[in-house]
Length: 253
Image (cartoon, rainbow, N blue to C red; front, side, top):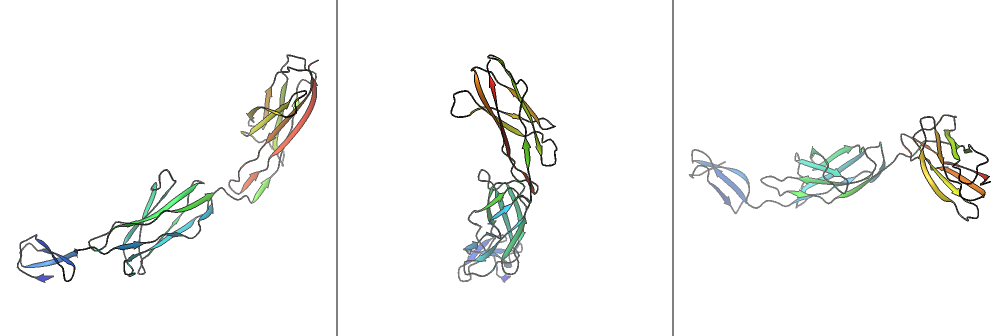
């Protein structure tokens, strides 16, 4: 506090000390309220692991300092993160320690690339500042257990004629014999005289792992039918391995 006759509420700058003062209500002294010219602020941000698996956490940290390198302690820093479309989707404030360090442990809930930044609002002495954005890649789980699958294929009509629509059916099961429901099965047909398979359609298995579809017999000859399950991306520590099967039958009598 500086003893000085002044107008209540008046503010002025002492250029020698770079201090801004405000006169008190009695007009007899003044209180420093900040710098005339704010000090520049530096903020950095890092992440302990820039690539993690979904379900894992990582620590985001950084430092808040004056332009001369002195630490800024007990200051609130906001850490923000989100996908490219909304990089400030999530945010949380933390306080710097005596070294100007701040940190936050985050646990992403979606497998995607996040962009992280740190922001300091500033005060009467320091300028506001925002860090650069840094990426954090969150992958699906690495599978600890891989479960094999099998897929069967049956043609209900083993002697279809021209113009018939025989039914292709089968079941997708895991290595323990349990049906695998709500999974996509791709069905391909190689017609007589064709050199490649043509995708007929993709169907979903029912709750018991069964699938079925029909197709039109338009040519006489040997047809090859191929079915495939691509497997699943690892989740919750395990993944289902893909499987395939094929059969041939003469059609179009």
